[in-house]
Length: 333
Image (cartoon, rainbow, N blue to C red; front, side):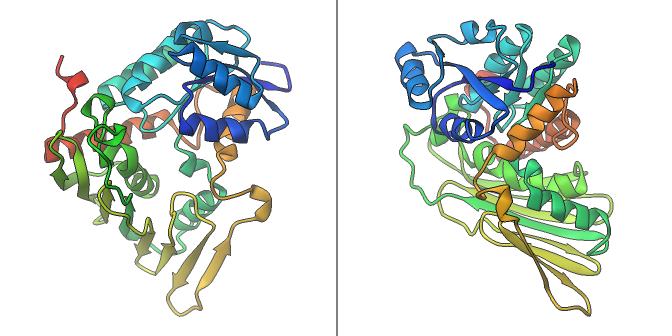
């Protein structure tokens, strides 16, 4: 593309779509030109809220809109495969919310489709684009704490959530693992790559989704990751990375940190603090900027959120679900 402004379409009108759109319209080089929902009324209301000129009552119309450079898919994750696939087949570039899909089979289908069509595709793992997380990874890669030995991370919501809530609905891919556990797993694999071994235990709801899951991942290097997620209790959402010569601690909200502390043997603790110019910790502008940079450059994937890394995380999530006995209705066919 040659124009200065990147034109976005928003597919779905829920809370995460609203949060992302609010960040997009603050970017001078982003233009939100269309929104779609399965309900025309919902699309129109969303469009009026954010000043979006075109509102569609079906996904296909958005996918066919040639005025759109990138579609942001923000549906519940059980619909990611269908929504993102529709857009890719119509020639659109796609940013798809996490978890990328229900399982690695669906993820592989999207990756294959994007590569075949020569279109940009990225999972909206905004944590990977966060400047503080990128700084932490650089420190670890540079050997600041020696060889990584353990990663600990958790993400839990207090609840309780009623049985009808999407987080407990098997048809929508409910449960703690896909919605929340994807963050601890992605954090561990950002630093260590795909694990060699996976053990997991969970507490399941009456509907058959995981209320909380604990997993231990292992690597041939001797590194271990102890990870936890829950929709049955609010956790500290903290993380820690320990190496042979030090440790990095991230406080609450590890996936969008304002600060972290580096502890090294024989030295005073060193605190790293986010640059206020980067915006509030909840901003999704960093991933939006990365998408727009890549699309302008003619790239079909981002080096910050590579598709092979997304597939590796989905393989881990699949294995954890196999260990804990969670399977979704969409997978039974």
